Length: 337
Image (spheres, rainbow, N blue to C red):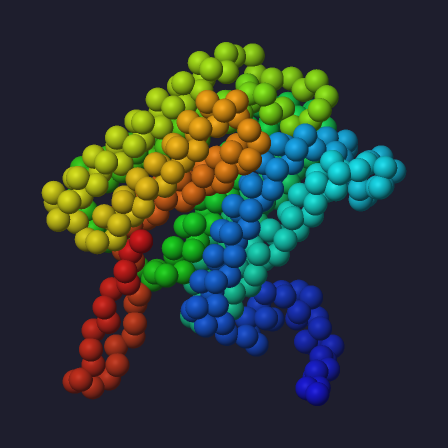
């Protein structure tokens, strides 16, 4: 049995003043551990969106009718609240798991040697986005699932996913200034694609806010707009994103771009095709809950693919100190994407 050493008063005081520094002085995670910690935050960011969709699609959005407590008298769901209370409260508890994943990413980034301040800052950005979205989630409940606040809740989750993906990518790179792998025209086309994809996600939240899945069995206000019209606009934007993706792939091929950007553009196209199939099937089958849930998952995967395309257009080589001696070799640059 391993004996745990007792802490002195000075060590206890140091741990209380700056726990991250205290851990960093005693633990050095491997680069693989840091990458895994960052990826855990990405996975949880996707999972919280999917489970949030399950809350809405099961009509459990007001399973806990108040916030931050589940009811005025109880912090947790009670047996009288039934299935809907369990679903809604379970989703709230997953926020703590998400916080734990983000916390692990922050601790791993702070403890890495050498310390990369930029990576730690990205972890803290995730933490504050999670806190802001938790408060916004409470507001969603307090205003009775107002569709505009529900849309903002989803968009803030997408922002969290963006930062989490950037953090994960940065764990695989160095801290040198980014070096572009493609020309300016290709970068501009990629940013046009990104803007179109952002509009696609935003309009998707309007489709949700005007659709039939209000999130609760009670009479919940919907966005006063023709659902079929906004769904058609959403589909049109999807085809614009597909066309821009195909154009980007051909341009990358024409300029003999590195394999990273080409592969990321290909991946985005495949995800878009799968998402499009789900979207059309759910539209013509009167939006069954299971397909709507898969479409929400697909929305996360599409956005991840878009972010990966953007990040693949540059590289940040890892700076390695020169090894004394004539036989020292120059390190290869880190692969982008």
